[in-house]
Length: 166
Image (tube, rainbow, N blue to C red):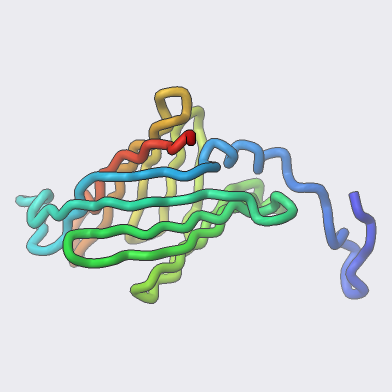
């Protein structure tokens, strides 16, 4: 551990990465995802209304130092292009994972993240997701939900991502 200290704090400047961060390694690699996205004309009576195809290429890699995992994606969602950046990490003081997502639509969302076995759950008040790893961690199954116009939880996006092991 580097015990160099900030002049205003007794917190080490460069503590070793938390061992919990190793759990994020399951995401590392290049992935190709396909599925469906919902939204237009959606209601509780018609939760899968206006489905459009989702196709994306995504990458997850450790930032230098291995304190944060960087996720980048570029997706075609129907006729729209959707690009984004996510930063995943572990808050040692709170003993919890977190993520911040930024996209080309101007969204900047902070999610609370919970890991249990092969499942990762991401949540904030208006969107949530469950990501299940299977097939020896070469397949991710995403189920995103959202609260749209005061509704209860509705499907937002369902997709599967296959790891490119080349």
